[in-house]
Image 1 (cartoon, one colour):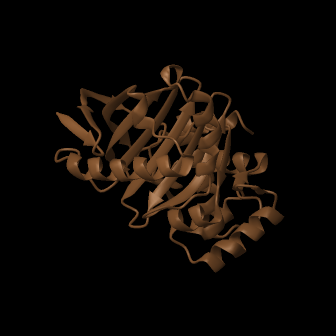
Image 2 (cartoon, rainbow, N blue to C red):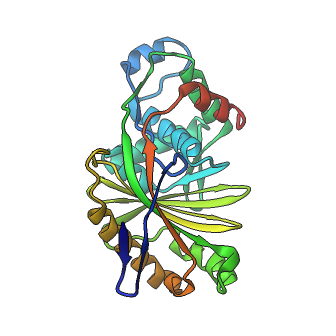
Length: 270
């Protein structure tokens, strides 16, 4: 199968499907009444449902992006949780007062106390409800080792931070010792885009969170990733397609989260 990107070139979509979690969404929600959770004593003081949802969003994004430091913007929290901005503002103020989150230059991040609280909640088997499913996506990969503009690209990637364009809204930035990731979500909330930069590769992935894995609309994803790539190229001022070092794959990511694995991963940051 051949997929065209822009008017300049076309290339083959690899038949090998990659199981991909790093940029995939995890739809995990609290399943118990908040009063019941507060009564367990685990929460160490009263916490509202909005506060818990924000904490869980920060924790699950850290886990799903394998990020040592997760910073989600105010608008990213609003977009992901679909909560009125005044309620988010009030919840963030309370969380900062309780030292469960930190305000950063790029948004909000979990504190060690916040990580510990989420880990305690993961011990309560019934407190989290997972909405399982599989998302279909397309990933474009550029080999940085072969790109002649490698240094310019690495510097220019930061121009994308906090940027909104077309129907894409910036969610946050996720950093680790060997990668930088950024995430956007469409206004319709049906698409999620992730850009990942490592020492060797630049990867761009777009997921359709409404797609049926048995009836993949690749044409729709083709149009969307074409538009996304076009927009970010204008922002960073580099035509990545000039490099001709491109790989493309169909990818599948599960929205389920293994709570034990998540707990073990988060415990390293407490």
